[in-house]
Amino acid sequence: MDRRQFMVGASVAAVGTAVAVTGIPPFDDMPTAAAAGEERFSARGRAVVIQKVGKSAHAVINGRHGVHLERMLDGYATHLLPFGTYKSPRKLIEAVIQAEDAGLLII
Amino acid sequence: MTGTRRNILSLSAGEVQRLTSAFNVLKANGTYDHFIRKHVEAMSIATPAGSTRNAAHRAPAFLPWHRATLLDMENALQAVDPSIEGMPYWRWQDEARLNGGDPRRSRLWTAGGIGGDGDPARGNRVLNGPFAHWVALIVNNSTGAVVPRPTPGLIRLLGRDPRGSRGLPPPSQVTDAIDRYSTYDRSPWDASVATFRNRMEGWSGGPRMHNLVHRWVGGDMLAGTSPNDPVFWLTHCNVDRLWWVWQGMRGITNYQPVSGGPTGHNLNDTMQGLVVPRTPADVLDINRLTYRYV
Ligand SMILES: [Cu+2]
Image: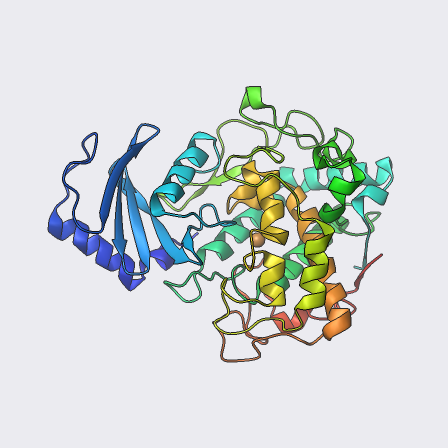
């Protein structure tokens, strides 16, 4: 799989820039003061930061390279769990983390 | 080669066994895994970058892309065992009615079929049937690699995956798609349109139809690596059959977009991420592809 195909989108590049510019520190346990358009939470032992930019969003999980989310229909979608949408970025990331724990994929 | 595609529940025990044995040969020699990788590749090619469409889903080529990959898999199975008549289809819409409202009781999900539900006490691994030892491939999102899962066994959670759905599509969803949607697809050629393709794929008014079947089987069928589970092919063979029924009513060459749509989805574009590259136009007429549904 060629992940560059996902990474070339301008919105993703913008997220990457935002992360670099605001200099989010290594992930501590739980959210402190979140930046605008940013959501921090923990799920099944992972620290998650979601950055929303325009019609897409990007999640960084345990400081590792993250998951790209797209706005679709009345929710959010990911190519990792491609047969449904999720009401919010958080619900989607929680499902992806559950899927990793179930052995379906590696985040 | 030619294919005669039958309802899997109409096959004899011996016919099912020859089919599952051929799948096992393809799994052992790497051919099967190549098909899984190509599906992941197609899923990963956003058309264009930044859109929700990919080379094979959420867009017009959904039906021809899967028709093409089914044909390639059917050819591979018949190359292993020429006595295999064709890829069987699974009429998922009938299973609730045939099994007193509980499709998990279908003969399909037995050791003599394609194996049963996953065992909740063993990570929902399928422990019986012809594919019990299979090592699934999974996507490593960090590296982009498609790698073997460390522990063997397919994962299924029939009607009970918390990330999936509880019921299979009823027959009313099939008649809805075929009878009410005469337009194959329309701009913006994505998951938002109310068209035959999108009703079949199951975004319009969904989750329904194809998406709902993936979600009901659950486990490996929920990921981009869904061809891990051979039920993928039986599921899509029924989707393809229903498209052919629709084509019989609405016209074999009734495909949109002819041009001006996203790359890889126009009538004469080469579809991306297939084992054997083809255009939608190449696969519209199954008579020319020399298989038939009975
Ligand atoms: Cu698919």
